[in-house]
Length: 259
Ligand code: NAP
Image: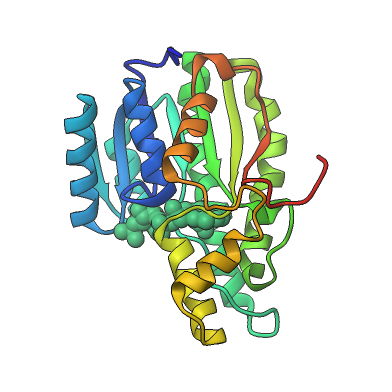
């Protein structure tokens, strides 16, 4: 399917690996020129070179912490006018409700709620004035069903979800859509880190921890960054202009809900 976005310009955050990288690859395959961000310069430059070589689009890499005001300013200055924004950053650490203090919540809100909101505030006006734009926020299945050890994520992502629900309907008249993609378990470093914690806590191997978690997913496997990226690219396509303010679960059926 021709996504109709060849020649558009996208900013993809958290894009050197995992789900953000999957989104960057799929957008590049659709002919979108990219500005990629992550903190680690080496991995980011490697990702940029690989995407350039594979898809022949222009790729600019900006190594910066997108959750810090200075990092965001640097990324936004390099990105300039973009048609497509994919927000993403690392998720908050696991723990228990008894552990978290105000500072832990402020850090989680900064990274996973206020950072995407700041990026939207900066880039939505340009998209609206040009009459076309797409925003995809990478959130989590924890928005639909809380994950006990990820209470900081449950809280921060719910806040972003409420913001998007209202804002998406205010920018839609200008040809701009905002939607959220909610990953269930995908085979990335983040999933590995959580599985390693379980393996250590329960004295089992990493493979056993993975197999145990895969067994809880109706699809009986983890998702892939490529599948995730394909869904993101579709939401950014010309065909998705009527999808507004939605929360789309990509979880192999793991969240057991009707709606
Ligand atoms: P990942 O494999 O660890 O990749 C995260 C990417 O974001 C890397 O490129 C990382 O590079 C970059 N990044 C992290 N913090 C950043 C920051 N402050 N500023 C700029 N770039 C940053 O993680 P993932 O699995 O793709 O997860 C992406 C998001 O989806 C996370 O918020 C995660 O909590 C959420 N999620 C993932 C899953 C899953 O199963 N994978 C499930 C539910 C939700 P650097 O470290 O070099 O910056």
